[in-house]
Image (cartoon, rainbow, N blue to C red; front, side, top):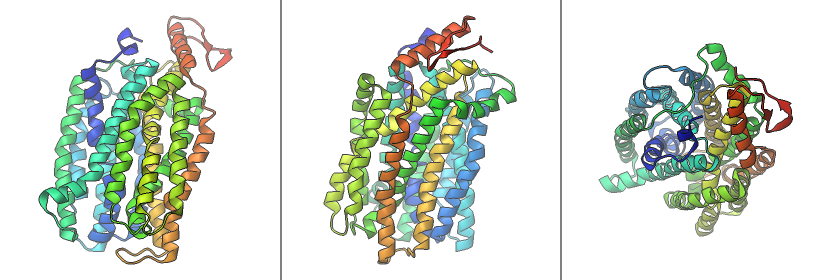
Length: 470
């Protein structure tokens, strides 16, 4: 590995690399929180169909994510493996955003087809951007703590972008004086799309132009590229990290999907935008402290503490009811104390397990690993949206009316109780994660020795000697 890739990253390159995360956040809360309700209540797509389509697109992702990851690993050209994807894929992604956010007036059947088609296009091109973009991050630096700082900046801008995207419907409505009727909601989503489409193209173009690729090339043949998918699941540290993260992500996506429903029908409050703001601002402000804590107590310990704080505070939300919006706001802030750590630290841990794969295989396969990671992240989000909305539809949810006791109870269970229990399971799984600072340094030393023709010992299995690099 080059000394440049092992040390500090210049500030200009840090910003250029992290910047696209701000724009890519539009495929987050707007899609998973606002658009389901917009399409069910305004456009006229049945709520169960919205949930089913969001689940179906994740089946599609199960193919597209690892495929694009493998293709990214194998891309050859003067501009590198990742940058062609980062520069070109945002253009069709921008078109997809406009089409999804600004549907024409259609009957229910045609609107359902429109939602499904544009949703599939959105996630195909989003994958074509995000998988190579995220695969670039672990290649930029191999230093244990510098990697945490770099990826925390990326994920911090993702949080800022998420906050901006979450605030955009209210901000656009205020800026343009839009009413809260159907026409006003259509107008606000059109304006959001017209803002984010060119922003995404500009930020991704900056990243592709300003961030050099320093990663070593993966094997050229297709068999070796797709073997990375098999090897990812054979990589025990990655498997532990992936299972724990996926369980926790599914838990966190349930409240992300249901917050508008929960606040309106359980708390009978109108301040959902304020509550989202409190949660994200708290997470963003404290994210640098989680980076410092990860330097002091190691990444795994910091991640476990973050998940524990996030879970312990949020469990109390289950017991709230009408008129308790202020108590909910306090619990949201307390839960947000751990939010930044749960977002940023796993990204750095993921990069470390990719280094361990290089030690075992002799190849750099960031794309394959990020493809698998992307499936898990998006599957968790889709399950959160799809199952929640399917369950709401099955217990009798109807838009814009007083809900039955069964619907209210389902909202409380799905919004607060199930996520808290899932986070406890994720914590129990994460305890087994084996890579710390010392072992990571041992992995890098063993990679260097193996590349020099030696037969190093596996730092995670001292009784095993490794062969020369393939």
